[in-house]
Length: 273
Image 1 (tube, rainbow, N blue to C red):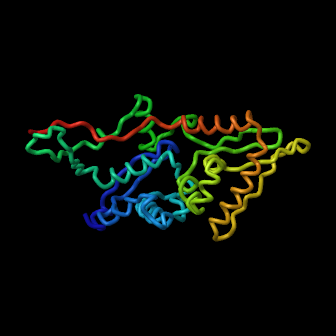
Image 2 (image 1 turned 120 degrees about the horizontal axis):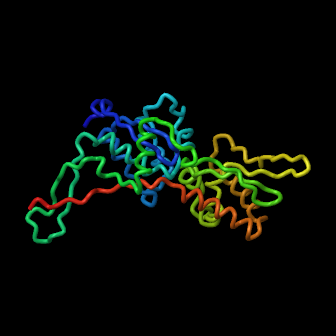
Image 3 (image 1 turned 135 degrees about the vertical axis):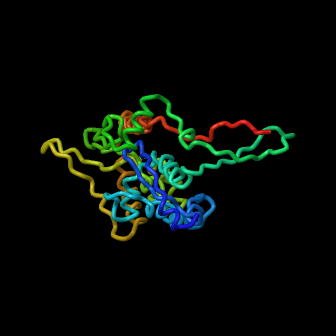
């Protein structure tokens, strides 16, 4: 359908890790093509990811919509990526969800067939509680804040405390891709931790204060900003002993384990022949 037709279609869904509802207008066919990005296939992946997420951002219907694509990506949890793309799919195809199926029978006279699928049948909830929480989020009702991923301040050593947060699309995709491949590979372990860090604090025991480590961005230069942060965080991580380092790993594992049990699938279908 055309852009004019797409604007008339809207759909509600949820970013369930963040506990937020999301409303999108449908994409036009030419815009859907922009969502097909493979990092390994492109020479300038950052630009293509900007186009991909920028397309979705332009269809976001929200009175409190962040003022820029970058600001939105910094709030979009990477754990919500599947939910975001299903929201896009739902906005585009909810009213006419025709799905192709392939018959496994090699002798079938019609190996590929089309069937209308109720879009709700493409969502799998692990428990009734997950389904009820999702309903409340979509309908903009209050949900249990303990089930929502948020920042957490954790003392790691006598000298440092770290505020951990769920990684965002910006910290997981755009920040690492601002570095060249050699640097990404060299600091892969640090980058894997850094995307979960919101702030690091020096613990001033005498003053009983937490002093933020300065990682102020370099204006208009993401690469220099991430290189600077990478160097600072790398030196701090080297000061932790094995128990302290394990505390970091366990905190990250706990964040990852607290994902909503909602997945997406194409339901089984019986060949008409």
